[in-house]
Amino acid sequence: TNKIEGDFNMAGGFIGKGAFTGDGVTPNYVDIWNDDIDDFEFGQGSFTIEAWAKSSATVGGLIGSYWGSDLPMYQLDLGNGTTTNFRINATGASAYPAYLSQVNATSDPMDDKWHHFAAVRDTSAAVIRLYIDGKLEAETSDAATTSAGGDGVDNGQNKKIGARGGYVPLSGNIARGS
Image 1 (cartoon, one colour):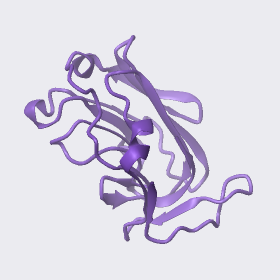
Image 2: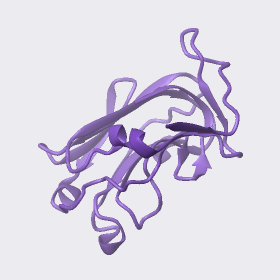
Image 3: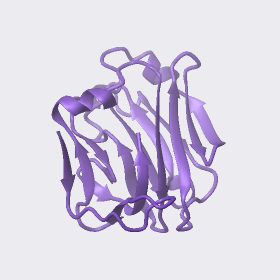
């Protein structure tokens, strides 16, 4: 079951379709929970998360499982310049931040235009990558998290589209997140 927290606005969509709109203040987000989180639990394996989004705000959660530094997680955030980032923590509090990998954007996509964001964890190459509009923004080693073992990035918590955990809501629009 998915739960939409706050108002869901279908205006301002991408290519004539509707879009999620967050105001960056109230807790507007899509909450993915219960049996549906299995599609967003990636364990120790490789995965890609992506979304079409636009914003002109300073920072906000786009998609992920961030619940603080005490749990394994992955998170794709939007922000000005290098605050647009993708990060994962494969172990949680016992080794934080030793098992945290983060890659930051080199360009500033916060121009109120639609952009495609993709975050990749490639365990065979032991790297994480961040793409904006099909262009590789940056990549960094993921060796620490891939060697951590355990459940990888799974934390059994609700996943959020349009927020980081239950806070840092996105001020902008999301047309598609997967």
